[in-house]
Length: 361
Ligand SMILES: Nc1nc2c(ncn2[C@@H]2O[C@H](COP(=O)(O)OP(=O)(O)OP(=O)(O)O)[C@@H](O)[C@H]2O)c(=O)[nH]1
Ligand SMILES: [Mg+2]
Image (cartoon, rainbow, N blue to C red; front, side, top):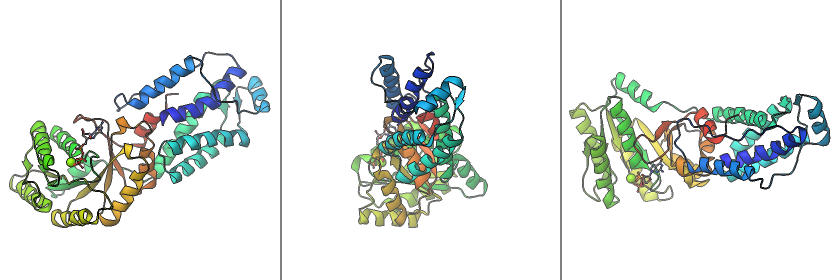
């Protein structure tokens, strides 16, 4: 997505700058904040290299009158036709990057209004456009449901006498539920908060060993039973264990399931009835593309979902799902998975997503 947006912005801006005035070009640089190096960033580097090698540029889109004005003035105002051309390019980039249609529409309208009133620095059109896109992107993300600070919420509940705080992880197969649960146990431990893992995925034989392995690595207890056992009763036992040992948090794993599998959804409803989770977290992988939005909507028809954890953003070359999640779902985005290591889980914020997507100006 970063690549597509960069292409849309640079294609529009770069040739104009070259024609208006010969000046050194500022390469797109990638801002590194909380995210580790990702394939996306490599692609942006490729993009910059491509430009250096003088490969194909997009056609000029500024009108001749705007170009002439730019020669004599330090700033220009884009005409409606020029803005339309720019927005058309952005729209294709966003939709191809898995940004949902409604989020795309909101963003483009917001950006249109900004561009109509913007004074664009004629010597640095590219950076001026990036600034406008950044603000519109932030506006779009801020328009969605605000995320919440999960660790603050857990602390609050504990302070209010709500221990053990029960957190249930659910979602489709292989999205990172078990790993994310272990990452949260790890983060809680670092904050001095105890947790116990409930190995309630009894559907897949290796899942119990996987959870045990994580429990051992992180250094937290695990409650388990045998393959095929009732997952709800394991959660029940884990809660009883936490109460008996004054452990503040119970992290309940579940087997991966598709939203279309009625039996497994009914089983999940039973787990919710028995364990009465304080927080239910949907774990979805960014790489799932557009179907992720549908999966969450379908799950949430049957089970209350309090927050979304978007995993594998480090593997997602498109990255637009974060915008779709934040804007379109109506459920707060809480955490972002950025790798396989226990530390690779970061708090969602609109600024984090913008920094991941857009180059520095
Ligand atoms: N790169 C990357 N890999 C991740 C991330 N989160 C999880 N994984 C990997 O994804 C794979 C599946 O993770 P699991 O935690 O087993 O997924 P699950 O949802 O529990 O899978 P099931 O229980 O089979 O439904 C593992 O190899 C994890 O290491 C992430 O944020 N980034
Ligand atoms: Mg699992």
